Length: 120
Image (cartoon, rainbow, N blue to C red; front, side, top):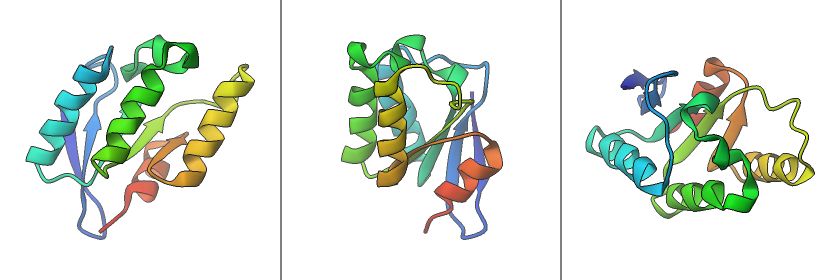
């Protein structure tokens, strides 16, 4: 289930509601991207629980494939979760690099996600 939010700058953001859908592959994410574009959204918020655990295992390449779509379609993404306790060095590095580039950010709260996606 997707919920829509308006930011103070007038951008529309799509949020995949926690506990609703699980993104298991790139096609699942493309469906959400298409829906958000159809509704004129400038960014998408996902919650850690909306992503198949394989997303966080970089060996599966699922994260890279999904995040590449956001780069290709020039859509911002915020992923909400508790990433402070990540054990994998490669995943910590991936999160840090993603946050520094700005297209995708890993955040700890909904308000932080909205702040990062407050575009237009």
